[in-house]
Image 1 (tube, helix red, strand yellow):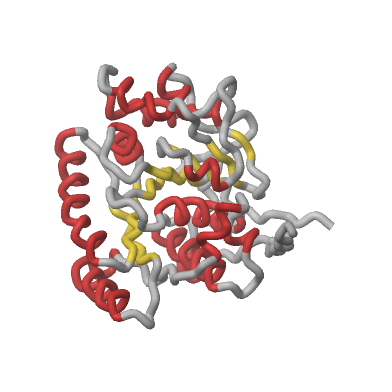
Image 2 (tube, rainbow, N blue to C red):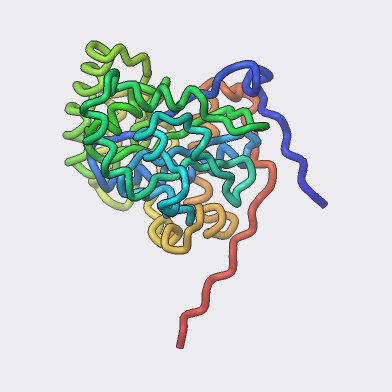
Length: 299
């Protein structure tokens, strides 16, 4: 029997308003940014929210994660930005119910150079994003995976977003980089008229057995207080193996796994902060995807 997907809790979250745009960003690489963007998007989709994941990273990691790297003759995000096309031309459904992807392609490496000479270059993505829904689809949430450096692509993602989620791995260097990130966000507000707010900081690669994790967590919570998510993403080897199998953590890990638990909890908390779910009525996944069988090693 088919499972019926319930409507989002907020009655205005569908066709009556534009989707909320959330950029997952950090200028420091290796902090779990793409893992967070993909699995947060999948968890929100499982709760009945029509979610678009946009891959705005020249490496195309989110697209590869979902096994949907576009060919040269397909319309992708890069082509939309190079030819000033509506983003809806690049949107494709994924195998995950309620989740769509606007994939990156090999031409994404050309976009930064192209945008340097475009009028209103900081808002090219925002203009394309204005028409992001394909026929018959109305998105509730757009999650943008960004590059781990401050090029024009990342600037476009930040300027086009209403909310920013910052993953921070439990190491000292990412903590030091947050000062630079904060200065960057302030400059974009002042010089580019960006209107985003920081939704919050989420600790990734957290291991309570290691002193460094506890120290970084304490520093982050002392500095940013309530802007730090209660949820932490714990160290889990499944986060490394899932992308190699082109699966989200919910497809790759069995029920009860810590990776699934953490990203479910993060989605619950993020949806409340976004105003899409009331705090007292957090939405549970519409169904529990069964873990796929492990591929036997070749002899």
